Length: 165
Image (cartoon, rainbow, N blue to C red; front, side, top):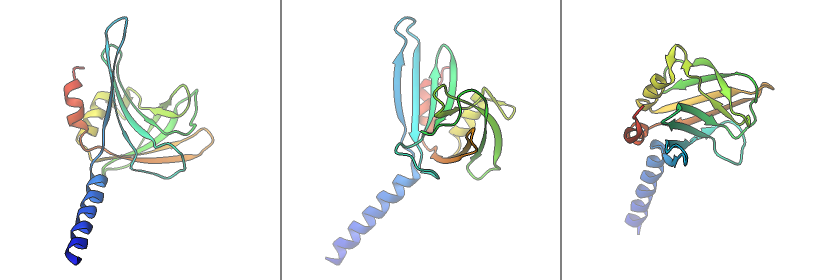
């Protein structure tokens, strides 16, 4: 009996550890009906956040083979709809960096600019591909602070078939 309990405990411990160490990535594939242009969205859910929300924030990498690349965080909280806003971010245990990001039209997401801290969005994506974690803190127009953390393991493998741009 004790051996069975020990085996179950070890198994459950491994399941919990593996679920917190690996990111789960999801993919949505679309094609423009008129132009046949492919659009791919790859996303993962936050592993941690410091605010209440019914929905989990998502990190989204959207590749539109006609328009280019977007990287954004859907916070599920209202940020702002008409101006840049402050974002602090940290990749793994590196220094915390600051940037101005662009709000989505509905105000619930924050888009990475095409040039972020003197590198292109494509270079930023390459850095994310080789990283383990991304932590983002967004400040809303009212001064509310929302911080989310994402696991990035497996991103490079998910993107590989789609990196034509």
